Picture 1: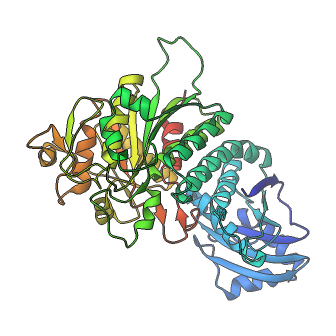
Picture 2: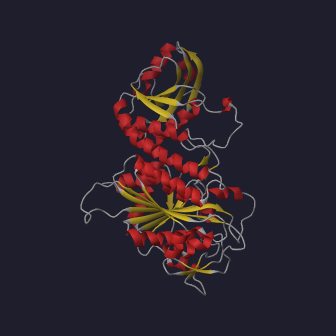
Picture 3: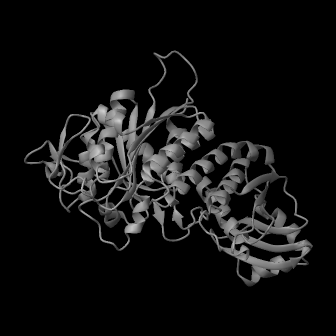
Length: 497
């Protein structure tokens, strides 16, 4: 992870410098303090470059000045837009942009002159998030092709406040990195059992971890989850993670925990209803919902969140074989409800069915939020910009939408209704696991809702947002860890003591 330091605003004696400048701010403006110093040290080279590029400080605008003199190897100016419109998310984006422009430098600083300590910490968080790189399996990459930036110093008048704020931000960044690592791993490495063992490492952060194997789940009656696992040589797991961060008090007055549930299909061939070969390699990230829950639990523990939270993940591999579940099979879920399996590629909802019922029966949480790369239909509806979400409670829905806007992990609420529920009626069982092509993401949510048992609940279909094919300001191409920032913000804004 990129090393972050905070220091008082002063022109560095060497290395590279990023100047974050508000729109309309020149050397006389609040954010232009170090611009004046850099310009003086380079005999006007920086101001001449900004003038030639018609730099005005508009959001996202940037100019790079190479070897301007005075021992500075590079000066980068980045526009913040209007200073009074600078949200934490926009500050993070500026930090991410700075990291990307300075990545080839061995040492660099970024000026947060004119900004608060909290904004300086947001800049640091954005830079760290953008610096993520999964290169575990690269053995022939040349040193010149690797980024060199290992430490970034954020220059601010409120260095002490920024450092305090960064303590929580670093915990969140660690959670994001963990989720990205999990989603990036190849499926021959990250089997259900191996993923469960990765969860055990959260015990170092104070998280209590329980792992359930096939024997325990069979004894409980997890017929839906175990049915998905039938075709694979890799045994399934369920992992329950507890973070007890709420202040101690009388048990009778302590709020119930908030619960997060993740779909963890470590590889999804579609089973007997096998997927087309083209693009099937992407199905290694069909466990991104579980990855997000694991990363979230690490984030909450890492920043010592004052909340009691439970994370549950169902981990399976969906493979075709002589022992695999067939279309037409009927399975009995942990809830006692029976399911006719029409399509074995609609397996994630079967996994969630048992884990959700177990969660509400065992822990009686305040609310349950599940995350899953569940349907291609949600991508057709919303593309890759928003995740679709469904909720049976307007208060929770509004909280989630607000957290999505604040974190930049955007959500769009989708409908639920009896008309959609009728599409999953079965002729021979309590329900079937698909309802046809029309409204496919909605009928999947209707299926999951049958295992909520009246609890306050939301379902996030993150199929379109779990992986990115291009760089974004704080998310490099690849695994996004979508859901970690969103749900951490939800907890911080609404559920901490």
